Image (cartoon, rainbow, N blue to C red; front, top):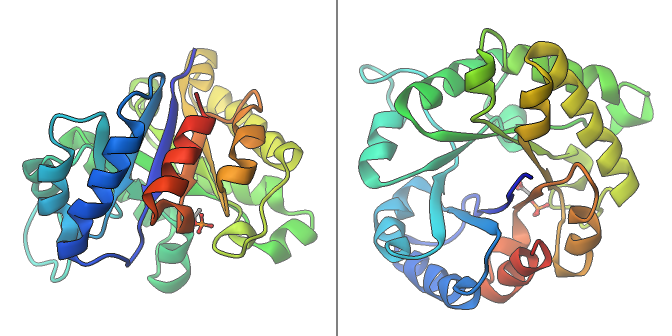
Length: 251
Ligand code: PEP
């Protein structure tokens, strides 16, 4: 049985002085939740306050990116060791906004992923097709490339530690959600690809979140699908009550 995992991607929202209040609200609403892992991923500048705020709670802390190098001349980058030192447990890698605006490729995803795993961070790796790719019938090929190149040269043991987020780009921040059937089809495809590049055990055990305009009203029917193990939440993660309602939909 896979434990569901719901993670909030705050993107570039919330000042350092606002992070603790949002986390306090979330903590209070999810404190009795069992059987769903809860993660918040604030901006780097919020992480120190966020680490203090999540202490002793059932909310884990994640970051939104990580450098592939351990240290050195990489101006503007944040290393896995720096994140670990702050108490960060998870890290989002390869979000479509990083692919779209910041030159992220499957190769850089792979390098960041290796750095995160080497430091003991738990990666949440995002994959997903664009609207024009889906409409051209290219979704399976796009997902296969992202999975095979993003996860290249990893052992089954390393692959088993990864959380994958299937995020169709056309559903992110658009209010347009994939139907449970559409999402389930891709999650099943990702599991088949994991069986190919690792083995059946890894394919069965890896958690695959859905992301893309997930909200309280659609969370349960998405997470009820056999291969959907939680959600990566953008907009609805910025309010404690909507985020907590999504978490509870996964119970
Ligand atoms: C995301 O940024 O990962 C995301 C899914 O955003 P939203 O929920 O706002 O579509």
